[in-house]
Amino acid sequence: MGKYLYILFAFIVLSSCGEYQKTLKATDIGAKFKLGEQLYNEGEFSKANRLFSQIVPSYRGKPQAEKLMYMYAQSYYGMKDYYVAGYQFERFADSYPNSEKLEEASFLSAKSYYKESPIYSKDQASTKEAIEKLQLFINQFPGSEYLSEASGYIQELDAKLERKAFEIAKQYNTIQDYQASIKSFDNFLFEFPGSALREEAMYYRFDSAYQLAIFSIERKKQERLESANTYYDDLMKGYSETQFLEEADTKHEVIVEELKNYSTKS
Image (cartoon, rainbow, N blue to C red):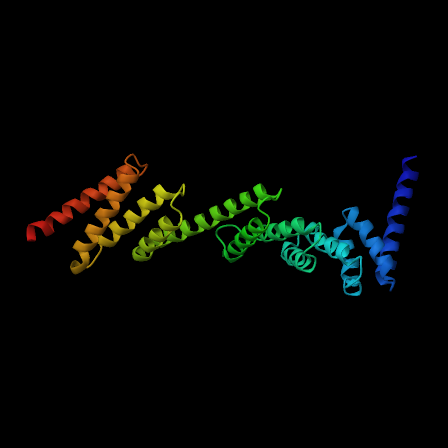
């Protein structure tokens, strides 16, 4: 019995493949639309997409065009080709502003850009673009059922940009480019005032200022020691029980002793 079921299954699969290949090579756009929709509904997005791509130009201006273009965009999304999906959903929204699918298509377009955002260690140009697209969607559909999801994506992307900015500033500290590190941490603290990384950023900004001052040339040393001392005070005001307390206090003691020398000279 099992053998016959296997043969029957194989026959159905082969017949299905044969029908697909035949339709793919045919010139009947109606048959391509019908089979493409069937495959789309079955989740065979790659196959459906191949058929849709052949007939999209022929359906422009026709009543079925709106449905076809929506399925075409969705097929890219189903294939996880988010770059093209984002573009196609955007194109659909522009072409059919009165469509009942407008809100969903606009959201999926923005979500596709979100899906294209890389890990924080890579270039974040696409992350910034995704935030812009999601914010544009929220502004356009403030009462959308997708509002909470879109807002969550923006928060996630903002956190990625935050982490990227922090790691860049910290990397400057690691490679001993202390001036660039201080400037980068200043920018970070200004741009992300509520960051969970704020304490660590303030410590490494102080550390960079300390290192810059200690190894500075003499004519710039006093000014840089005073600047480092200010950053220490800022850290203590914000985090008197900081996890970096021991290291910060040790460095601060060195700064105080160094500054005494200039006080004596005066």
